[in-house]
Image 1 (cartoon, rainbow, N blue to C red):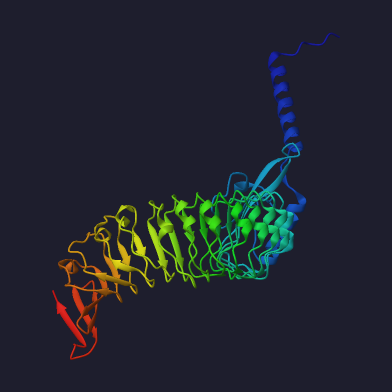
Image 2 (image 1 turned 90 degrees about the vertical axis):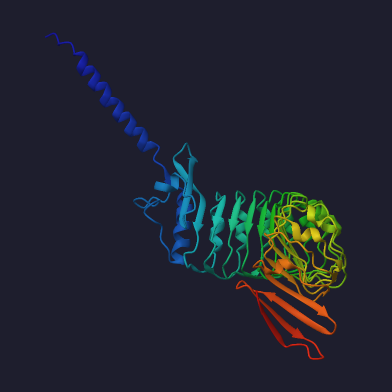
Length: 418
């Protein structure tokens, strides 16, 4: 018996069913799953830290799902994955953020198994113990920060293996020992936060290689020796904070090459004195703080040409000469602290309205008080008149307070309302 020909409609439906079946087969064959070893590592770490993956990126128990595939941004607890391995069927963990989660315990050695990590942020927790040497296995790392924890022990030399690092944050921990010379291998490093971490010793000579540094926070440690001359070769620097250490003078004049600096803070320099020659080329400064640094010099006459300067603190040094009047007429300057030097001469008759915080105490100033002290600023100055030494503080309530220390019937305190 001769069969009836199939209608075109039946043929089209059959083709559609075949396409759907084929697509489902392809989906099953290319299902994306987290690399099993990395999944086990992350589960183990989270278990030790007593935290759990969130449903935003751990859908039905699959770590690399949900927002982990779209980008986690700056959420405080999350991962991000890349699923281009094994023809798109395997996902690797590339970013891990565990920030301000009150995590306690150690950073386990197994974190070194997450070899595809390029971003690690563990800031603001209560992590203790040492930074594991296995961290050196994470050679794809570009950003790493463990700041504001309770980490201790030496900084592992294996950090020097992370040659793709551009940002490194170790700040506010309790490390010990010196900076590993191997960290000089981080030649593309741009930001290095190592404030208040407890390290001591000199800055290693290998740090001369860090010519791409743009921001270095290294204050409140026990670094010693001299500030290296090669620091002047870090010409991309915009922020350099070295105060609160035990460096010896002199401050190298090579720093004058740092023309991009906007924020320079140095302090507590011991032994040999320095001039201010090192600020010569820093015309982009907004903040210049060089306190208690054995500066023996005059304030440069061209200081008024530093037109971006907002905060200037040269207190507790050996500055001499008169205070350049241009300092008081800079439109940008709001804070001027020159106390505890050997400056002399009169205060200028004019002052910019932007300059509202002034400390000129414990110098050898003379002459009368200018009219601008009635403009609602904060002023602390020592005035010498015969054998009377007056400390003047002009408060925000428009009251001038003269507190005297002297002899021959000098008043103990005078209040003068304006």
